[in-house]
Amino acid sequence: MMRIGFGFDVHQLAEGRDFILGGVHIPAGKGILGHSDADVLLHAISDAILGALALGDIGLHFPDTSASNKGMDSKIILAKAIELAAEKGYFPANIDSTVVCEKPKIMPHALAMRESVAKVCGITADEVSIKATTNEKLGFIGREEGVVAYAVVLMQKK
Image (tube, rainbow, N blue to C red; front, side):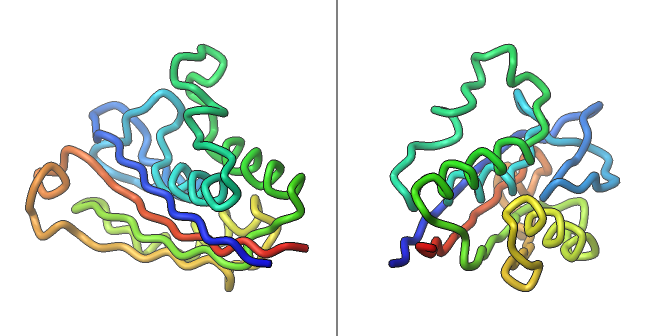
């Protein structure tokens, strides 16, 4: 049996923050603002996994009102989503994702991000797709005020 999940996340960009995407530090003028390390890509993937199995979302499991989640490495969030999926007998067959931001350029870091995501999920980098695009200078993304990530995950029963 297979189930599909969709994930979405958005965060502001801010001075003085790290730009962490897919578990990889990327040099950038602005970083991603959030309660955790604000890795929008891992958040979208985690939500897709949880959604595929009707397990809520990351806000349910890792509320931004909890001091214990402050500054949390988002790989921990993804690992928890994988653990919850495994408890239901599922694993990700493949992940497809898209990041939308003007700067920095994402694709030079895509392989490292794919490998990072695959390692946490217990799959191969060939089963993880990470794409990137800009917003053609339109809206909050175009003004370099934020970054968005979308993810679709196909979960397969073991």
